[in-house]
Structures are given as structure tokens and as C-alpha cells.
Length: 561
Length: 77
Image 1 (cartoon, rainbow over the protein chains, first blue to last red):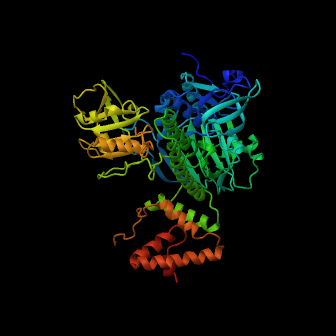
Image 2: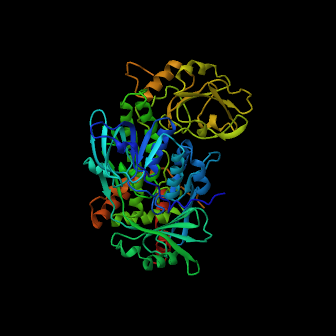
Image 3: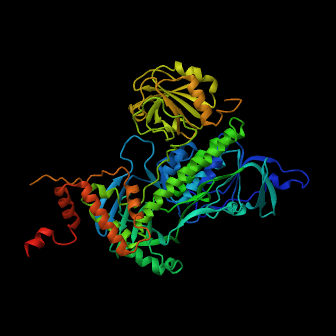
């Protein structure tokens, strides 16, 4: 075995690209997609495109991964997306899986909650994993893809766009060059230089509060749970969050208040006594990373500006309570990848990219709403707000309803794209949590002599999923391959075998039928990002074709798919 | 003992939206105004509930842990 890579000190080499050798009179080659920013969102977008056959250039102005642990909570949906991108396993192996959170008032446990009360999902509700590991595993996956051209130390200094393309001015250690692309994805972070170059802004609320992150390395016997204190004796009148990361590192997040001095509070002589007060006098620890932060809940009015698409923190910002930053950014990437591919391949009109913006703007509003409410509960903005908060906390131990009002963060789940124009509304009655626009539920399946998971079999194309023991109805959809994979879900014990063009998955525990409220003959159309596009009690090929056209904005095109 | 009539299970469909509306109700009010608004809200809701047994139980639960119970304090008068 080789030594594990130290992602914190890893550097990537700058390499000169052929685009830098162009002559001034000859136009530089046109790339289909350039992604700016090699953080989790940019890497995920670039991997998604490259593994589906679209060449992509990924630019980063630096040559290292995330400095400091930063985002540490990665949600079940994000892990399912990383599975599709081919790097879910190393994340989950390295990460610390957790489902349980506990909320304390002063010294007393108010209540505990379980984020994944249901068994039989491939992935846990959350893993905790330092951002540099997440970026490191994504970068390792990126390196396996010949169509992905990562260019470190390539800084965007200028941008113009025409009807045909975007021209980027790039600065490198070898000097500047021009890069042309049909589409640009700006995943360049909260302070997005691309956003500034385009004179665009994000709007929202700044919260007048400061928080201290102290990541400490120690041997401790706290359980692997999210612990949140309101007004603990070791840090009175403020909140504290304790969370475990891999490598014996623990995240401790102290609320400091607006008047705290951000420079002074970072000094070890200030930080160590705060940590000591929590851990007690006998626990040995060392400081791994310290940061004092404030935050804004904000978003750009539009995530699409012509041929430039904004994704992740450049497009939207949230408070950290609920882990909705990186997780929603990876969902942006998941939403955008297939749409860019369909448009670039000429299989869908450019209007499909408008739905990236509208779907993810709605998701951002939801994330901002949740994280704002959490922040307003944790940090009351007025005297009366504090009184109500304390009242809810004091009722919470005895009254179930009050536990649902206490808000220490509503943790990230997949957005349901309720109002998406890509959804085909139900015509038949379904009785399950799944609705058009929601991410398909996961469940165990058996196929080709082994056990696996439904979502991990879905790949990156549309999927036509039929329940029952006869695949005959699916044969009417054969001409839609390879853009639609055809899947038959058979009941446990069925001996129907996969055959040409139809993958058969055995619903070993009957949970897939239960979670999809499926009877024999029930059909689901899933998008490449695994959201439900349409469903019906029986497969009508005409209806499926129309739903596929709707889901790719091709309904009004002269040349339907 | 009389069976409990006050329902402390969750009855609100969207508790976060309720809480946000409750805090929003106080926007731009000073403390005295907020107290008045809270009192009016309690009176409105009490009338809506209309059941004196439920209201007594809620009053008792609200006071518990804050000070001696009403019954104890009146008994000493």
C-alpha cells in the first residue's frame, strides 16, 4: 500500500497548454465548456461533463486544494451524486458517518433526532469529511478522465461574450492568453471574480454575528453525533456546535457575538481557554485550524447570464447552519452537467439551460429560507425574539411540538423541484413521498448475481423504469436509447433475466415498489440527475416521448427527440 | 386525576413558517409594544380555544419551572 496522500500540502503542477501557442491572427480553438474554479462544485461539474464525453477545461487560479477543513458535512444526496461521478466510495470510507443529532440547553439534553430513521439506503444521512479530502478525491477522479483538462494557476482576468462564444483572458506563470468557450460555468466561490468582471452582484442579508471555528486534534470519547448547545455553562449566552471529523479532528464552532474582535479571537491564547472550558482540564488537544467568520444569506438574481452559468457559492450564499452551502452547490453541478451536455450535443435547445437557472434559483431560495430561519433562532435579533426562543427551549423537554420549533439548523436534503417546467404533472394517483421533481428514492436491488443499490445503477442518462415481470412495454421505447436506459424492476425471487437493451433489477426487499408506490405496470421516467420527470400507472409510449421532450425543452421544437 | 386535555404534540403543519411569522409580527416594535402585541395575541388565541380546562392547563404548564405554581401561591394568601 502506498502512503495516504496529504491533501493539505499537495500541490498541482502548472502545465502550459496548446491554447497558449496560438498566433494573434488565428483565432484560438473553441472549447465547448470552460469551468472556472476547482472547488467541489467546479470539479463535480467538470467530472460530470468529461465522463459523459464532453471535453471540458477546468481553470483554477491556485495550485492547491482547500486550505483548512472548511465545509465538513456532506449530505446523503451529495454522496449519491459523488457515486454517479465515480468517487463516492473513498469519501464514505474516509468520512465519519452520522445520523444522530443532540440539542442541549445549558447542561441538559433537550432531545435527540435521527436524520435517517429508515434503513436500506446506500448512503448515510451525512458524512463529515474535511473539504480538502472531498476536493482531493474529486481531483483524483478528474485525473482519470482524458477529456478533462485541469489548468492550475490559470487566473481569469477578463471576459467578453458574443452571441457565439465567451472569450476569457487568462493569466498564467507564462503570461496571458485567450481562451474561447461556447459555455462558461463560474464556480469561483463566494467572492466570484467572474461575477465582479461582469459587474453583477448578489443580494441578501448580512448577519451581525461572528463565529469561531476551532478544529482540534484530540483523542476523545464523544460519540459520532452532532451536538449543539444553547447557552452552555462553558460558553454562557452563546451557542456551541461540536462535530467529529476523520483523523481525530473535532470541529468546535463557538458563537462569539458581533462585538468580538475577529483578529484577537483567532489568537491561540484566546482560542485554547474556550476549548479547554468545553473539554475540561485533562483532555490533551492541539489546534488544527482556526477561523473567525461572518456570513451573508444572499443570491444572484439570475444564475444564467447568456453563455455564463453561475454555480455554488458564486451564485448563492447561506449561513453554515444546515450544511446547505457545499451540498447545494454540488446539486447545482448535478443539475447543470446533463443539461450542458444535451445542449452542446445538439439534442436539446439552449432554453434547457434556462431551467438550470430557474430550478436552482428556487432551490437557493429554499436553502436561504431554511438557513435564515435557523440563524434567526440561534441568534435572536430582538429582545422579544430571544424571549420566544428561550420559551421554546424551555418547553422542548416536555412538549413534543416545541422540539419541532427549536432550530439549531435544518440539515440539507435534496431540493424538490416542485414547480419545474420540466415536470410532467401526475394524471394517476400516487401515495408516497415521491412526487414529480423529487429525487428518486434509493433501495437495495439484486442484479447479475450481486447486491447493489438502485440509484447507483441509474448512470447519467434518462431512465425509463418499469415495474413488473414483463419488459414488453419497454420495447416501444427502444429507439430512445442510448439517451434513455430501460430498466425493469422485478419482484424478489423473479427469474426474469436482463436482456438486450433492458436491465433487470430485483427489488430484493420490496422497498423500491413501496417507496415508489409502484404496482405491476407502473412506469417512472427519471432525469439524468435522478429527479422524477413523469410517472404513470401504465406505460404509454406517446406520453413518455412527450414527457422526455418536456424534460429537455424540446416540446415546441420542430425536430423532437 | 383528570386526563390531560392540552395537546403538546405537533399540530402545526409547518412549525418553522409559524415561528418566522411569529417573530415577524414583532418587527420594528419596541419592548412595550411587543408585550402589548403578545398579550393581544394570547387573548385572541384563548378565545379561539374557548375551553377553560385546556387554558388552565396551558397556563400551568407555561408557569411551571419559572416560579411556584399559582395554586401554591394563592393557598398561602
